[in-house]
Image (cartoon, rainbow, N blue to C red; front, top):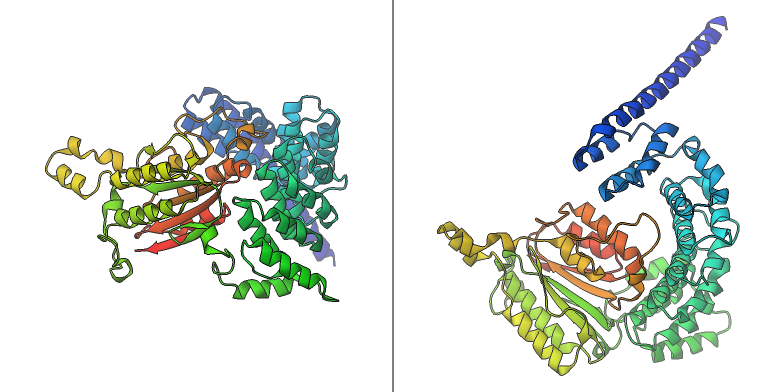
Length: 520
């Protein structure tokens, strides 16, 4: 017995000693960071120095990182946020939690809430609610509070979402709908149903998704009514109705209305359970019934849409001049070049655009080549102009350019123009040039997101990103996600060739779109 007690005491002492040594090591890491960062002037060295604080969580480290959120360099700010998000101990953030409800600096409040959310600090929920419910709280604070509670995964106890769903700022209303749906706050089903009639389509699309997640029977009729309007929302209403009722009548509101009236007359009929719905989803055909009447939709590369505000983004980099290898699959085209296939598909799509559809086309390689500076109506004149634009496009730096380069005519070949600037092409949808990015804001939202009518993009590429501000695919996905959280553009992606296609698949799935592999 004495030997056992002695062993336990020894282990306790050893554990305590190890913990003390660990704390001392972390404090020493912070000390060395401060010394090095003071003299580091190059951006890359500053970023590398900040990363040394990862794995060295302690209060002094968090204090240093919080200070860096005010740094003039965006990369320094973002790296500090990234490291802070790896800190999870309550003690690290206790001072923020204690001071948050009484802090008067609104910028600080929004920033602290964002940090606490990213670190998923459950103990901060009550303080976040108090700060957001303060009469002096700004829309930015309320927006960040909603995002933080979504990240933490707790709705709180003060009905913050219920109040924010009627906020004066549309992006706050949309965020509240997102939160109610994701956390399935069923008591607020009526509140999101009311938002189906919002005057901003971004709020409407958030409300549709929330209703689909909550699955209230009372949401069916409002969704059918909303489906009678034009545009992308018709498709989203059809999908939401399927997810509530497990029935599939496409984007035909008359068929939905007739069936709904029949169901309401059947005694004992009920909304299917979640398990029953999952069974139905497994057997559902992907496009046939879902999109209903074919003459009411346009499609590109087999992906239909009811959107009336569409952007087509197509790759004209050098590799698009290569031939596909699946001969039988592409036998009906003029030749087997990747670009010929894409060109043909896009021209066919342009011919099907309705007059009430607004559209634009952007070709991209190293740089962008837009057809028009903005969306234009799909009338007979614009459709003809668009077809001519597409017919004149050629891959840059393709086979002919390669031959010139091999002959020593590198300048004439202009191979540099034929690389793949994927990030620049994608961010065009948000009005952002990554080479001249807007001034970075750590918190809040961009009100310009509400002024851009574009709601659907088709993005076609065959190549791995090879040039631009970012070429690593995970970083590109994160950058698109950062903007699209507010812009809510559906991104459909189409792949052709031998490119590793997981990136395009993730891009579509992460932005409400469909991925199609045209072939190799």
